[in-house]
Length: 114
Image (cartoon, rainbow, N blue to C red):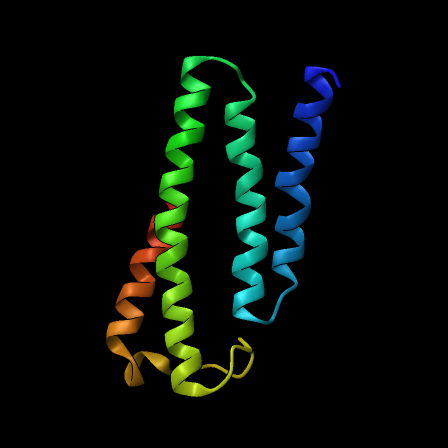
């Protein structure tokens, strides 16, 4: 495979899982598809074959792993408390689980500025 083909496939790995994640109603599936899409960004950085791209790809791996772990743990906490991971059935958890909300907010902010 040529370098251009690999970069194009990596770009599709960024785009397609992101659209699939937008259609999910299950919190775990949403985070999983989001992680696959972010993996495309990581690969794209590594496929630049220069110092900056490699450093950015590796930094993104560590940042994403950290914040994704925080989000998965808070989602599991919500599932444990409510018995469901369906985002359509969850609401008003800020008052019931304020610490979980705060930790999840930190994870979300970390993902936005990642």
